[in-house]
Image (cartoon, one colour):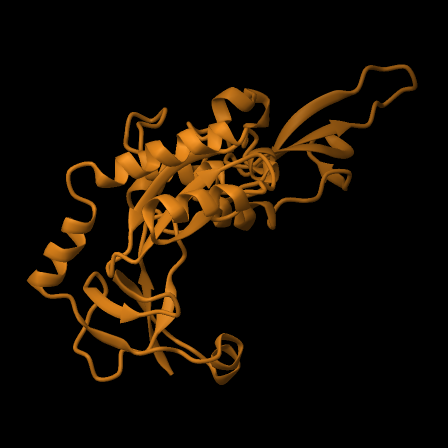
Length: 271
């Protein structure tokens, strides 16, 4: 089954809808009916779902229609004149009154104007039930709180990276994949320290994952650290890699007991 993945905000995940016979493309704005109400979102991609995937998701609702000019005006009207910002400021004040350790970073009023969705970050779980009750009473709408990670905050606000360009997560990078310290070790940059390897979000830079396949391909051709090898300098043990140079460091066995071992760089992958 071919499904359209529709995203309502930059920080929420895409949801699957059935495009039926609609002549739509990725990037188009569409109106859909969710379990919470009517919403407008952007088609970010199309995918083929297997029967197993369909069974896991249950009912896949249809796309109602392509968004019209009137729909765009309605969505803009719902959040006009700082309405969203005022709602966020009120929510922050009430959260502070309840002594909740949370930071509200974004929000929006739904297309049908029946719901207010607020995005926040926090170090752990937050009991925000009283906050939701107060916000529901004040706004007279269904209120939903959506917890984000610190990387999502940078994606929302945007900034300039150490490379001098806009943040990847704010631009072309649609999915924030896993970035681990193993990638820094693999690329032999772990010694640079966390400050130079971290992005504005405080986590490891997403760009460490860009050359993952390249490094893995080279590493597969290099002998493992600890391997005994024969070189023109004599036999020795591999003690380290120079991945981009396609070579390894080998500690040559001393000819006599008491001699200082020498370490030589031995090319493995030739241009």
